[in-house]
Picture: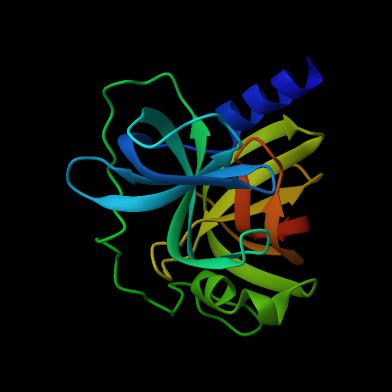
Length: 212
């Protein structure tokens, strides 16, 4: 029951998911995940979900949780140029709005550039460089979710973008700022954070404090 509740809370609170439907072209399972190459009738791309019993030719519906570029699976010993980490959905008619072939040109500069802050695009592009380091971002709050796993979850954007990755999630026990506010957010960067149930973050900032 706790696992089911956690899954529902994560699904409801942490993502504004885009729904997808596709036919499975290839599939393999490893390390608790099933990797599938899917075709939506217009585009084909790889997705990863928690392990499930599927086969080539099956139709599958799923929700977008996060795209990753150059993702390496240690258990498969394989690098995917681009892959979507996805969650289950009951939708049967939805079509993807974000496509691997339509990546927005990267913009590495923040709209809120000031001394001592790091653009969000830089953190996504060079996340290895910042692992376990304390960083500061200045940007606009786009979404907040409170009291999930005893934490508050805050989405911030600063106008920068790296391969469609422009929304950075911060967790904190501090009272979250309001949506629309421009704030400084300071915390420790963690990469490739997996909460299970298909909820995967290539970058997340934890133990965050905020100030205007």
